[in-house]
Length: 103
Image (cartoon, one colour):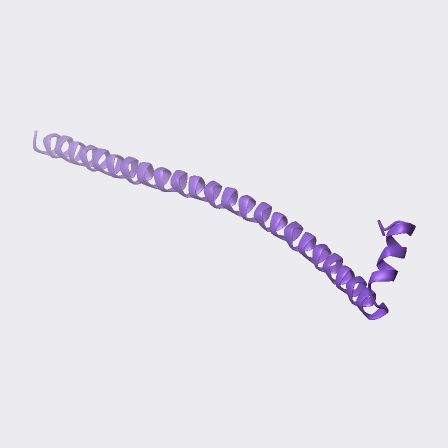
């Protein structure tokens, strides 16, 4: 309590005991609320940190999904090209086979 002896004597002479008790009770309530607000601020700071981490995870997942999507597209392109190549090779061998048989 930051109240000196002279201040206490002045307060005692000017206020009733009931008024002094009410001021002390109000002071305790303000201190209690101050502590509660401090805890809320700490909780909000922790929550902010959690949301930042979550945002980073979401961004990382998006990057991974983009890479998967790109790799799938590349696979489709390569398989399509390979399929065409194989078809041409089969056709070529068939033509060679026919020429061999009919020659």
